[in-house]
Image (cartoon, rainbow, N blue to C red; front, top):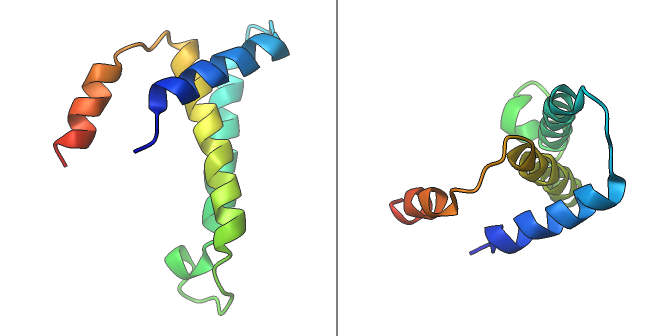
Length: 94
């Protein structure tokens, strides 16, 4: 299983290095996440483009997925999320 806490802390260090101070950070992160999710989906045309004859590009889809995860973690920092026990409880119950 992914070590979410370690990834969260790594994202925090990256976020601190960037040191963006704009007032629009939350909105920008939401937009960035939406873009990355769209880019990920675009690399998997067999999943949602039933009319297309293009093959899925799993390598590029994973890159876009990782980018989306980066923004998801950063949004967590933005809203001061810290309840990892809740996430683990949900993940383990499946």
